[in-house]
Length: 458
Image (tube, rainbow, N blue to C red):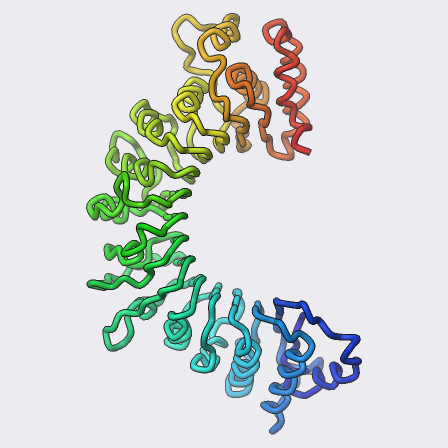
């Protein structure tokens, strides 16, 4: 549904709805209302000014509620032109949005609202279970809306940049705010070159039931690890961007130990740009800690690492994660030999997301002529659960050099049949696979190797 605020303010929208038969425009099962706001002016550029604006807004919202009586979520995007008259535009825009969301328990507010959100009557919006503020968070009005719904919220997404968000955890009197039912918290701190503010929340346990924690770009509260307090027994999903400060503070806190988070099953770690490229020789403790978080997690994604080689110490660290099923290393370059070592040591591993594995350096005595015999004699069979390698495009790697490592891996792993090339490479990759399989070195294994052909992805 697209809403032109000028037509709402002027009464035109209600008049149009009133001309439609109630039975012809009833949505009894509708749960979500998606609203996109456009201009508050008419086609001639006039702003609606009328003593009946508030009444028109209320009547319009009542009509929407009649047409969709079971609505429990409103998703809003767009907003008034910031150049329009603030005294008219923002006041009535706030009234309209407040009334639209007042009868729901779930609100999703996307980019485009800007300062208009400050004109919401936050005090009238209570008992929310879902709140997503996907715009530049700012002002006490927003913080008040979040804080006063703390007892009922189950999902909270907060995007911000140049503001202090400590108010969602501690009110103006210094009292701690608790979110007893919150299961998902997503905090997105936009790029800000300024030094993050320091926080102290002594004794605060704001999120005791948290199951999913996502911190995009930077951890929001400096060296105060308040987001991790009291939820070790419930946390299942963790996504963090590792700054150098966080990578030092977290290990020192002893929050994460081998047995501290029994339900944590997915860990996604990304290095902050200030930490790249990372070097194992320079930062062994930081990398070791990132590897050791949640050793029993089934999914581990170490995202956007600038590492040219996977050194032996890291291979040994990965081998501790015996429950690992999915490994995502998009920035790492693995040799096929390192990859097979990983697969051997991780019995449940089924998926790897990484660059194309390389054949070099070859083991002693192994050449292009005897490499097939070497793999079938020393590695086959292994990794019976392993089935999929998603590889990213790399223009520096010739296509013919992308094929043989996967063929060798298929010879070692009996169930590996999913070499997921990118769409633009798939046809060329398939042709080269077929051509290579027909060579003397691989032809005797052709029935097995043809299971890799990318047409299986269609």
